[in-house]
Amino acid sequence: MKTLWTPWRMQHVLGEAPKVRGCLFEPDENCPYDPNSLLLYRDSEVIVLLNRFPYANGHLLVAPIRHIACLTELSDGESYALMLMVKRSAAIIKQLFSPAGLNIGCNIGACAGAGIADHLHFHIIPRWQGDHNFMTTLAEVRTIPQHIEDTFNILLPEFQKIEQTQEIA
Image (cartoon, rainbow, N blue to C red; front, side):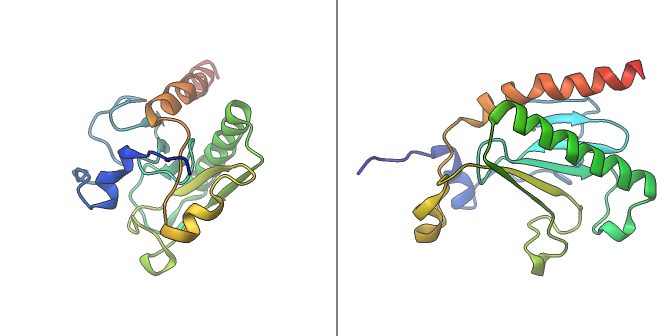
C-alpha cells in the first residue's frame, strides 16, 4: 500500500486550525486578492476564496460581500452578481483543471451542513473519476494531489483578468 500524505489537513482534523477573526468571508484587508487568506477575488458584491480544507484541489467558496445567511435575503443585484461569479468561477476551474465534473451548491443552515451558517456561500468542487473512491467512505479522509499554494497560484491570474475586464467596461 502507498502512503497518502495530507499533512496540511491535520490542524483541521484535530480542531487546532487558527481561528479566523470575524467572518471568513470578510477578510480585514480591502485588497482584491491575498495569498494568506486564500482570497482570489473581491469586488463590491462578491468574494471568491479557496477552501483551506478542501474536498478536492480547486475547491472554491463564492459568497456575497454582505453578511447574510440565506438566498432569500439577497437583492436582485446581489443574486445576479453572485450567480455570475459562480458561473465565471466554474469556467475558470474547467479551463485550468479539466475536471470530469463539478459539484456546485450551498448549504443553508447548520442542519443542512453549513459549516459557516451565518454567511451564505457556494461551494464549487472539481471532480474526477475515482478522485476520492474508498478514502472518504472509510475514514472521512480526503486525498488532495496538489498543495493549496500551488492551486492558488494557478487560479489567481484568471481571477485577476476578471478584475481587469470590469475596469475596462
